[in-house]
Image (tube, rainbow, N blue to C red; front, side):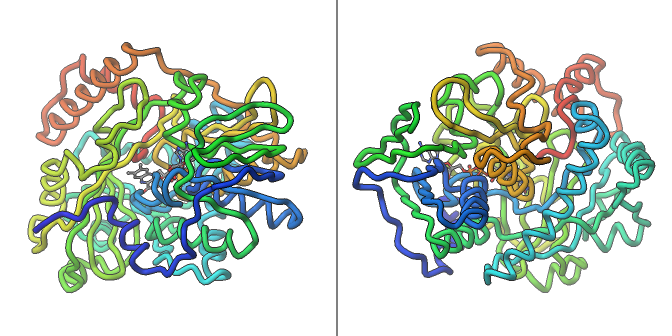
Length: 466
Ligand SMILES: Cc1cc2nc3c(=O)[nH]c(=O)nc-3n(C[C@H](O)[C@H](O)[C@H](O)COP(=O)(O)OP(=O)(O)OC[C@H]3O[C@@H](n4cnc5c(N)ncnc54)[C@H](O)[C@@H]3O)c2cc1C
């Protein structure tokens, strides 16, 4: 079978929708706010700003099509920050950490409500998530977190019995698991294309095939494209993985790493047989997790983070091609579902913007101009980008509220080493994690050196898909 080219979800979304045609910028125009990047962060920000102040003239500039970046090609797992609570608490204190966890849970429901209100059929299913262990070394890892969340009256996770674990995951590969109802899955590209439609309806101007070629900082600032420019009082850079190559000041704050995905042909009867007739996300206990979910038309999608690291944070071509880790994805599918009768219909990949803390950060660029930014979702951005848009909206409108004062709005706080140390370090840690986790799968004790190296990645928090 011939694999489709390009990210599967975006192709599917473009085939299904009758989009307002993409327009490229071909004039010198003015705006109150120019947002660069047409993914979730850019579009949610545009929509929230417009809803807050309908008179604002807002322009979005997108390099290719809205959804060409991570937002149109991710796993579509709607997950919250509850598993990041310890990391949030360490950095921002218990009150703010609790607020962010609760806001992320509410955001799952807010995205559902927004889709309903605006007739976005993004195949969104709030059917929960299972975090599991697939070998003895992963067992017990969730328990201290759940106990902690319980003490803070924040816990949405419950331990699954053996029978429940089997029903919810459809696989005998899991040894233990916890379930939270504040999660689910979505067809990610249908969501981002739906946001585009709503933004256009609200009167936001969107120019696609219009990459920013230069940013002239000032009051106002000017953004150049090949055939035009936008002069705007305020600018939001919602460029995700593309940020460090365009703004070197962010180079030490991100590492670009692939998440690799495979999706099967539709086999609805097979999935029903396994009990997988729901949209829950299943995430295992590896450092760079395996994660899977089904689609309403009976496909199974499986992803695995932490494979291809980009030297110098360049968005290389390999990020826009079928996954070079297809054999690894196929082996994982076989391990989880040895009896599943289907084939892989497509593989793809994409760059995740992993920050040193495993958390996104937002802020205002130093120097001239009112220029704001947000990035670093670290593989957890489908739900979190709505919260990112709340932060950016408050910053841009100069509000003095919880979102403008949020700990995540203080810019990047932690950094990676410079190249070539960063890339060499990333490869060393990645390979150590692979050896360690393979040994654990075999029930063997990993080398002490590999265990020590793996702790460098664990420091940023588990359950990241990048
Ligand atoms: C393969 C993969 C799987 C993932 N799986 C999950 C998951 O299951 N669950 C989850 O929560 N998160 C997941 N994530 C993370 C999530 O997809 C992202 O955090 C989220 O989409 C970020 O949205 P964004 O708008 O900030 O970035 P993007 O969607 O990447 O948007 C940035 C946009 O900027 C545009 N751009 C770049 N350069 C320019 C320029 N010069 N001028 C104009 N525009 C430009 C790009 O084309 C792009 O559209 C995954 C990420 C990847 C890559």
